[in-house]
Length: 318
Length: 111
Picture 1 (spheres, rainbow over the protein chains, first blue to last red):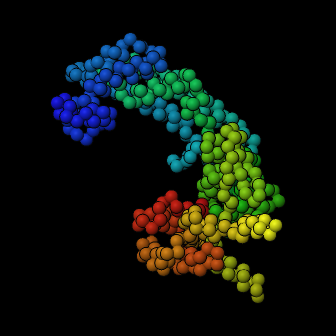
Picture 2 (cartoon, rainbow over the protein chains, first blue to last red):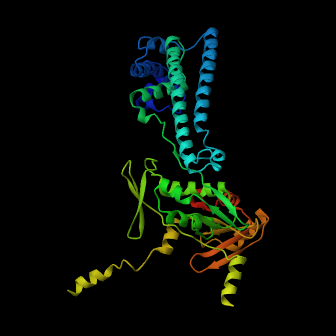
Picture 3 (cartoon, rainbow over the protein chains, first blue to last red):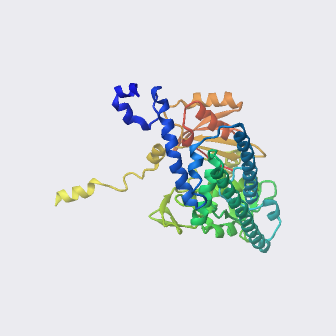
């Protein structure tokens, strides 16, 4: 203290964990003093056990026994966490690709051969599954977190980060579930792409997908062609014929990019948006949060002259 | 009266469509891929800044990716690098790791 008395400014700067070595002792008691308050507030918020919080904060873990308990508790906690995570993964199962954003195309292999009527059924089933998963998920998680809260409140060890995190989320889910983070996933039917001969691909359900995204097929098709660097046409049965060999996965990637760029709202991530054109500019208006923003026009960019193009030009000229 | 007319004329909304300047301001590098015959592809790099020597960049690309390529002069877009084969990700990594272009300025197109 005598050292700090020389410079009163240092006392003022107590709050940032100073570089100087003198202060090493200072933050520690401060921290101890602060912990019961934090524990009180968090436990009061959860309405679990407000009484025992003072004891927890007073004595950090000291004995070997305590350490053992610690380990056990941690193990328990971990196993529970993994279970919950497993559930979450089960929820995400429909996303076949690891890099999938919040949009996914459902389970591809099942859907590949199913007809349109089946698609609707399957999606309904999928939604039910998800609902069940959530229900299953809720029950163990809440109990686990409660136990976790009890664990650290009852014993005289410190709480861990994951326990507090669980606590926050359970409180959040109890009080206002819409903020809990269980966002409804945006799903559209997977594109049905097959080969038409050796040089063309057929994208069968463009119109269907466009309807689901609430976009004009023209806009989507324009984007597809610009991104893939090809051309194509729509045949009599509303299928898109694309020049070049493309697989379902590739088309899916491009569609994902389309959704990110032109469908999902950048502010609230919702996909309930409409695209309007004003003065040659496209505006994306969100129907759930009301925000409006411009989206860039589709640019084809540089097109290299391939041998086919050269041949075609020659044929035209000659 | 004449002043008012002069004022009106001082701003011409159609003078500059901002087509070129738009590209300059945004400064995005577009990496595209095009299909050729069979399973062959062509990668194009568009929008590299003009103060770069495209030929040297091309040479580095060719050496790094072991492919052929050339620089194409386009009326609207300036010089565009063409490379044989699909090197989109490799180009992005190369440009970013050599400090030529920051990674968020690179846009990869195609499937």
